[in-house]
Image (cartoon, rainbow, N blue to C red):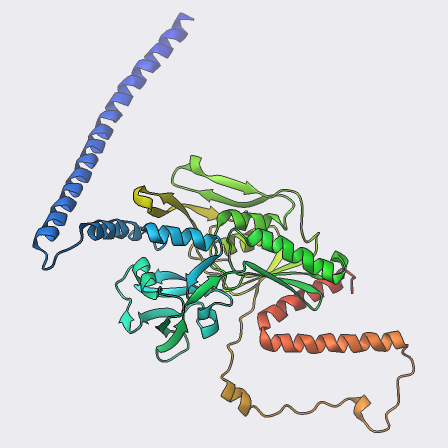
Amino acid sequence: MKKFLMAAGAGTLAGVIVTTQIAAPLMAQETKRNTNVYEQLDLFGDIFERIRAQYVEDVDEGDLIEAAINGMLTSLDPHSSYLPPEDAEDMQVQTRGEFGGLGIEVTQEEGFVKVVSPIDGTPAFNAGVESGDYITHVDGESVLGLNLDEAVDMMRGPVGSEIVITLVREGEAEPFDLSIIRDTIKVTAVRARTEQKSVVLRVSSFSDQTYDNLEEGLAEEIEKAGGIDKINGIVIDLRNNPGGLLNQAIKVSDAFLEKGEIVSTRGRDPQDGERFNATPGDLAQGKPIVVLINGGSASASEIVAGALQDHHRAVVVGTRSFGKGSVQTVMPLRGDGAMRLTTSRYYTPSGRSIQALGVSPDILVAQPRRKPESEEEEKSTPPLLRSEADLRGSLDNDSLTEDEIQHIKETRERAEESAKLREEDYQLAYAIDILKGLTTLNGAE
């Protein structure tokens, strides 16, 4: 017993000695680090005073400080920034689903403003702004060299006023101008409709309204169809959805999952990580799901697509998503301003990060670009297709009942509807065809 205690004591003593030997250099490094920080802050103060005293024109000290704060945050990543009081208030309004402006979600890339996506039904959407466009000028003034908030400020203005933005678009040889009239943007987060026995849920943003809109819209379409058995599946359309609130992405994913992880977040400190799991209940009651994504599907959209894909609950169709795999926390500051700071990365249930990579669709389907009207008008009329029934004196089919004839007629009408939808929205038509195929495989009509 005595030997054991001695050995323990010697071990403790040795531990103290080693700890002291390691701690001394660490303390010296920390002291040196703090000294460097204070020296840098002194340098900042010197520069601030020189600018205030010797710059060619009078400057507003408040503007200088705000610019320094914003510069510090924007140097971290494209999504961290300082929000002055008016911008902080605007952001709160946006998450409630109503705000003023053009109706585009933007980010910054290589000094230019890049369109993540236009929002459905907004002035920018109606004017033809597309995901992936670069905004180089606003009313003739270059945005190169401005931070994102400054560029966004240039695009703001009174409702009803005109703005001209210059766009660079892939596939276009030259930049071109678009004239847009600013308007109040009222975003309906989810629009529901039925196409050929498939319920289409068009989710345009993740605001406070999203889950409630989705639940209500899906229930209405199922009721109109005559029950869940009357629909063959659901299309969740996340194309050009720039994201929004994390909790809404979790709720939308949970709506179609019975169990399992939805998303996890990991920050600098492993203890700050969070894991969000699904709860029992599936609004689709097991019906097949297709998720549509494209390059304008970002952040919260990618959480939903990734969760449903990893759990094999949905087939993901379209093109690779935007690739924003980080989470921003908005922190209130003194003076009613706020700081938007990237605090963690998020990971799909399989543990993959989509940061800069995006969600890859299970089935890659690109949306064909619309051809100019002049080209469409020049198209020759397609040849008239003829069948046996069109021939003069052809025999009637006497083996069909009236019900069978009616069924064939309805099948032809659905085929014509499919062809029309394929012209209007090829990706959506493809998604609906997948649901038809899955329904056929399951033995349903």
